[in-house]
Length: 285
Image 1 (cartoon, rainbow, N blue to C red):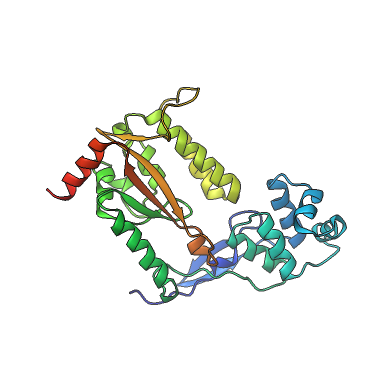
Image 2: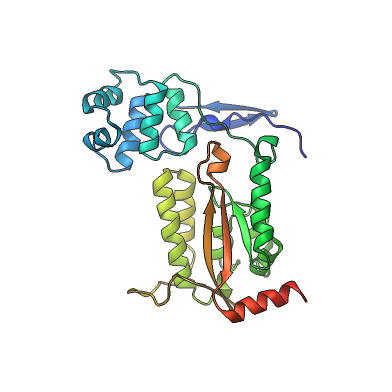
């Protein structure tokens, strides 16, 4: 296992008030815009399309006190910040940013996945990936970078250009890029539309600039336009070569670590008996 790394970039987040991480000579430093805590809370409230009255009703905090916090006339306690952040569904990293802006210590650590503290997480992920064979499954981070996968994922990566498989591998780019999986996806317009909608929702929820940039990049790839109207079937399938899949997403339910909060297991299941039989045959040549 690599040596332990000192991480300080968990102090910032992705949304309003995000920080810049700089590494010089092996020393990581963080620079943060000096933005008031009230301004950050107001921007997150507005991004959730909530009025002060809405937030007051949901949290039991008076509109007068919320107004004082947002305008800087009152300094919020860490308990108040976390209470508002929970109601606004603010990502953990950005909660740390707001706490720091309010003069408080960050509440959520960010460990490397190979740190001892996350050993139970690694074990759980490995159990899920191994247990899903012979069907493909992969672990991705909050920006859709491939973290780990089971051997069956090679079914999707075969034939992709080497530059798309050079770490860090972005799974959405691999899927939709013309040099990636896209030419072999038989229902590319429908699958592309599904992924773009999902990415847009994720970017809107997290206010993550990196996700918005990825969304704009992927929108620029060719892929056609999905037909309008209700689709047949239960879920949008991935029709890849002669096989058909549907996918599920597994998240950690109550994360208190920034890294864990961003992890997701994307698992693919056969959508028909022919695909199931083909995958079993591939796993036992």
